[in-house]
Length: 302
Length: 284
Image 1 (tube, rainbow over the protein chains, first blue to last red):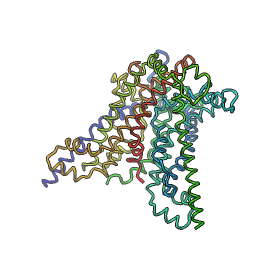
Image 2: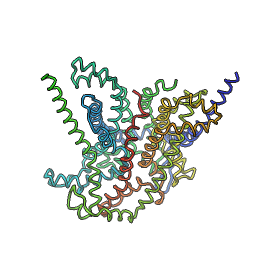
Image 3: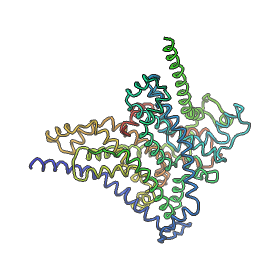
Image 4: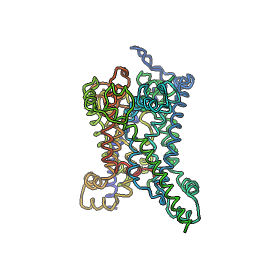
């Protein structure tokens, strides 16, 4: 009896140590979240120095978002640029991870290669985007290089074409994330028992067969994790296209992402639209997160 | 015998292909930074003359121009350093404390709280930005670093990493022993738990520092006093300024100023960083 009360007394400290997290969470995340949802039902924007509203309008902001075509357009832009970057990213990452983990290849210098491919992930995205803007500008080094090599005769205006602008964004996302994906997939591959590979080799399976019949099925959980977290990250795409296009999403707003659109409303202080857009983003992310959550939270607490 | 020879020969060819591809990919990663370095050493005239892989002699001059331009970049870098350092320290200390609460104690609602923290892990800060900015305005905290630093105390991702690390590296028996010796709970956390968390703490300090250092979205909405702006906001201002009026050597030097310190620190700490990507992440 005495012992159990002593244990209980210690365990009160569990609550005490949780106080900082929950106080900060409540003030800086919970209240803002409630306020955001609240504003999504109001008309409130600024026209010059005049503040219009706040006036309760129900779901009107949501209706406007869908009916004026902006939301579907920016959602499509975001997804297209994400896919253009993600497809090469997952292919290259799978290939590199398979090589790094292949015991019969015994590749040397792995630490060097991993260090190099992870490097772009840590670079300030805004500075990296500024660099790419300078590199691909009309008189920039890429045009100069292609002209000196005789591939182009006049500078190519990359940022006046939809495809080339989107491809540059995708290229940057690819560069920034394929190293990270490689390392995640590699850890998954190294977790697969080597017995399986040895047994397959004894049975005469080729490298390709081993990859598709053993590695891939066992890698599925990590693969899905990478896919969904990348998709959530993709929906938040902002820094790169924002800096690259100076917030305009040129040409003709075809590289404008959802968060760039949100940022625009936040700067112009259109609370109603910003709120509705935030809630929609929250719902989409919530559904995707739930899938990740189901995978990672399993049996974490005994 | 001959079959075996053929097989090792095949491996050699495959290995050679792997190395060639790896070197090409590495070169592709480094190409941009190499050109950045080269161009930061060239004058505006030289840059106008075309592309080269050979460095020139104007590096110091370009950097001098950056330091004396209308944007106070040194101030920006100091601001970024203050915000990122304090964010990293507070976030890691309190996330470890939160993880310790869940790891070391058995109390009512523990499981529910753990599940809750995991559930909010993926909520992006952008979706609460509207309410957040409003709240900060009401609290008179715009143009302050507080809204950029304090919220990181509640960092579910860092918490999760720490919890994972504790599961395999912080046995309950050790904490039990400290308790027997009469150490207080807070003391046990600071003196026993924190030192044992060393490797995890250093990895998370680096990651939190880097993500705060690179953060552009939130600081741009909170800070607009010229002396409070962080480096990413200044980069954005540089981008939106009248592009053609700029000395291009200076533009590249400015980008280099933002990028190269991170690269140098990364190369020193790369062992921790690359190893740390997966250490607390997904479990197979």
